[in-house]
Amino acid sequence: MSQLRVAVIGCGAIAVRRHIPEYANNPNVKLVAFADPVIERAEELAKQYDAKAYSDYEQLLAEVEVDAVSVCTPNHLHAPASIAAAKAGAHVLVEKPMATNEKEALEMIEAAKANGVMLMVGHNQRLMPPHVKAKEVLQSGRLGKVISFRTSFGHPGPEGWSLDGRDSWFFRKDEAVMGAMGDLGVHKSDLIRYLLDDEVADVAAFVGTLHKEDTAVDDNATCILRMKSGAIGTLVASWTYYRGEDNSTILWCENGVMKIGTDPERQVIVELRDGTNESIDAGAISTNEKQLPSFVIDEFVNCILNKQEPSISGEEGLRSLQVILAAFESQETGKVVAVK
Image (tube, rainbow, N blue to C red):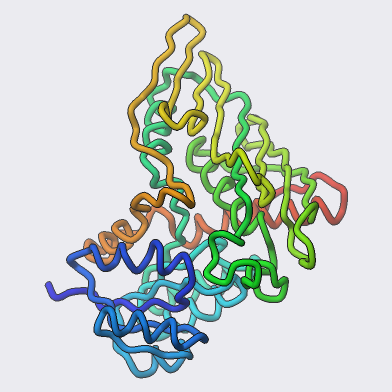
C-alpha cells in the first residue's frame, strides 16, 4: 500500500516534539503539508520534510490531498480544524482536550461519522507502558476491587514547554479557555476511566488561579471523584509544581495497593495484604525532560491501515472532557456535579 499522506495543523511544541517525529519514524506515513499562523514555523518543517507550508489550514485542506491530519492547535481551534479536516475526507487525530465544551465535541464526533472518517483523541497516558501494565494487573483480579484512589499531574507550567514560553496561547483565556485542567486534568480523568474501566458519576472541585500572574486560566485544581462503582478518589492538576513534578496514580484495593509512577526506578509497585511486595518492569512514563515514544501516532496509523475503530475514540475523549467540565461547574456553583 502507498504511504498515508498526513498534514499537521499547528506547529507548536506538541507537534514538533511528538507528532511530527513520530510520523517521520513511521514507514507508512509521508508528511505532505504543515499549517501554522506563524508561517515561518510551517515553512521550516516543510523544507525539512519536502512538504508544503500554509498559514491557513482551510487553504491547506482545499489544495492538498491528505489521508489524515493531526490537529495540534490551541484548544479553541480543535473543533473547527477537526471538523474542516473531516469534511475534507481526512482521518483526524486531535490533541486533548478534544474540545472546549460538550457541543463542540459532539459536532466533531458527528462530522467524523458523516464523512466516514476516524476521530481519535491524543490521550497518550492510556498508551504509556506502565499504565497498560497496571490495567493488566487490575484485570487479573489479584488486587480485587478498587476502593479508593488518587491521581495527579503537576509540573511547573507551559512556560518551559511551549515554543512561546510565557507568551504562549496556554495563558490566553480566549484561545486556551481552560488552563491546567485542560492541559493536565483531562489526562488524568481519561486515565482513571481507563484503568478502572469505569465512569465518573460525580465531581466536587476547587479550581483556581493561585500563582500564575496576568492570566485568567486556572493553574491548580483539586477534585473529588465518585465512580459509578462507588470508588472515590482525588484528581489533582497543577501548573505550580515548581519542584517535585508528579504524574502518579495510587489505587487502594481490597487486597492491597498499586502505585504507578511514584518511583522512577520502579514504575509499577504492587503491595499485597499478605506481605507480597513486587516491582513490575513496565517501561516508563514520559516527562517534559524525557520524551519517550507516545505510541499515539502508531496507534492512529495502525487503526487507519487496519480500518479499526481507535480505542481513544471521539466518544472516549468526550467522556473524559465531561469530567473536567463538571469540575469547572462545581467550582462555579459550589455544588457536587453529576457527570452526564
